[in-house]
Image (cartoon, rainbow, N blue to C red; front, side, top):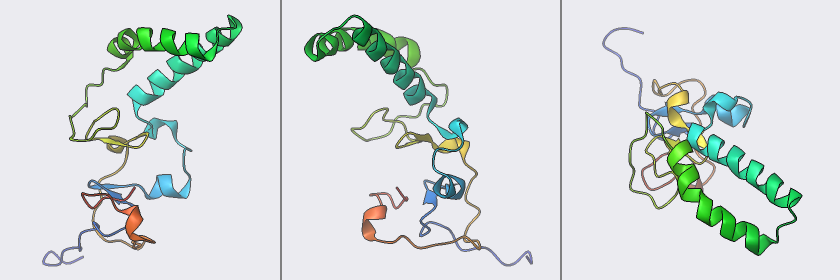
Length: 134
């Protein structure tokens, strides 16, 4: 590409999310576990282990719920640390600027602008408030 030509930004692409290209994830959702948020992944494994133990102990749903609620703050303190955490203004967990659902956006390449895979979203519901694809 000549030096005086620039690509159009990819912000209107369905694969664009906060400056990153999620094309690989959209083609094969969940294929690469390295794309997952490490905090959510660790907490999910802890919760699965807890559920297995609660089942082995034949705890009722109410007992298991109370026990999890009591233990969760300590588990979060141990497993909830991420060196790339950047606070966001959402009400969803983990409230990190780099999180998109269960994905860590830092695992994806930066969007270089409109490319041959550029695709508009199917509907307005695929766009969140800051213009990134969901």
